Image 1 (cartoon, rainbow, N blue to C red):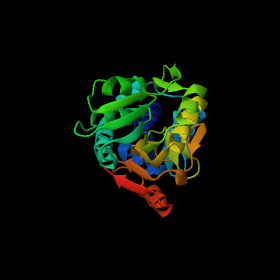
Image 2: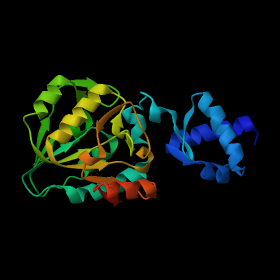
Image 3: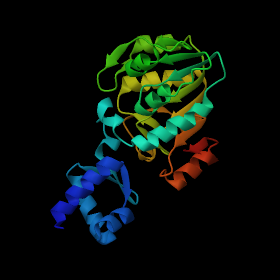
Length: 255
């Protein structure tokens, strides 16, 4: 494989998986780690990825770029299904109230909400609201605001104000990035404000984050790691970062 072809393949693979190490790429393409590092330097200069310690993350991990909801729905589907199933165990008992943040993993959780107990669901997600609206056991509260086309989520001052007078047992949150240095982050300031208000409105915060979100830093932080109680992820999550979360007192569930 020519260098240009290999570099293109590396850029595409990092974009798909979110994060890859130098050793993983060297093994994948049968080249030395020194060759991989040179390839990553070229790709970073072209803006196709971002170098991090020991490897690389996709370019949108450190910029304001976002994938549309329809695109994100097709990513890491198996992992998200397992994460959603594990999240069911954190639902409150009958007559409890939950917040479902907009996102693909939370959307999968919405599809698994039990029909044998009454629940109040607060959400800013149009797709999630549509999914649960017909349930006989769910009291749906669709949070107000301007709907962003990219995420199909209501955002803005009206949404934040509505949450200020509400209280939920559990907030199930999505995130674009989760890192030890930057906490939980998202590219859009209005999304970040809404997520922050959701977390403030809940007694317990459960973050649904597949392994591609680990080590990723996007523009706006909406929560410190000490603001959350539980992270549910998949088996590919970096062991060192999982251990660091647990040292901070965050419960980590590997689905």
